[in-house]
Length: 169
Image 1 (cartoon, rainbow, N blue to C red):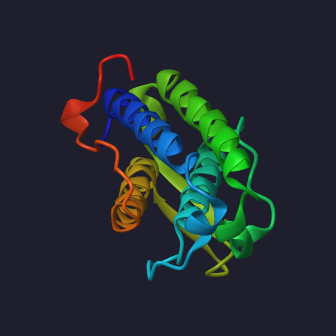
Image 2: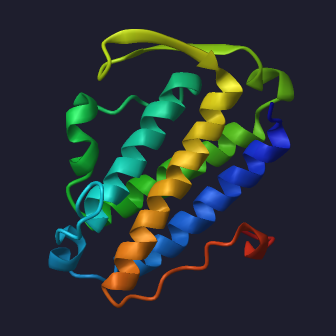
């Protein structure tokens, strides 16, 4: 389904996108970050936290260096207490994602992943490659929501086109 090259490219893209977002959101006031904006998770900050929480959860399922998020799904919108802590946690996790990707083999991406879903209360089995693709798609989906909220707030939105990612990203 996918190979290491894809995962490396997407891990680079993820880090590049989050770095750009971090540069924008660190300039915003807390009131602007937590303002209700009619989005799926309400605010820019809640959406940033949701992505970070989801990435942490997924990475923990296949990379033991990442600790599972504490508090279960109830904390996904408040995973970090403030934008500074979010930025530090995001940079750290993006580094872990890149390290994981660089140390994969194509063989590592085959087979199934089995986990117990707290929210569904059941055990789920899916192809690992599909789960990895889902993690990256999930990030992109919610960063698109953040981009819309930033635009509506009058902020300059980061470049998100994969084809314009710098070589050194």
